[in-house]
Length: 199
Image (tube, rainbow, N blue to C red; front, side):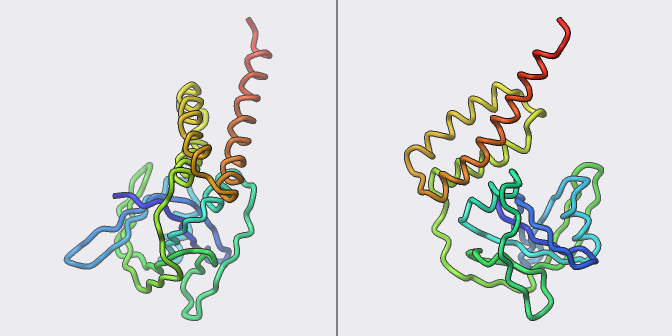
């Protein structure tokens, strides 16, 4: 099973990087491990390989996912660790500090398994409602623009919007609007490109 989370990492120069990502929690000889599979190239991958550390943030604040993929918001509040772990998001429900256990290289998407060295719950995670699910799905879709069929993007947007219309609060509506704006700008550029193309 893949969990949609926010992964925080630090570079060797102590610069924090924040990225949404799907991770797996697996068992190896009864030990729980976190499997992170970032694409090449990525800052998350570079940071993990440089420091052997990361922090997994389980959060129900979908504005974090939306803000990162759209660039609308970057200055997320972080809590520094007294034990020199990678910082976690201040508004996270639960966070896990992890350390690299094994690295399986790949030309496209390496797999990195990590031991959980610290785990803290800050507030209960009650699950995603339909609107939050819609925001996360659209956030992922917005990172695939130009790589998947435009018609599929439009169809998915219309379908996912049902969840927004029926169950969204103000937080989810704002998160959705950021991604919708990004997608609309993409389609506007596509139309301009078509007009300028020779017949």
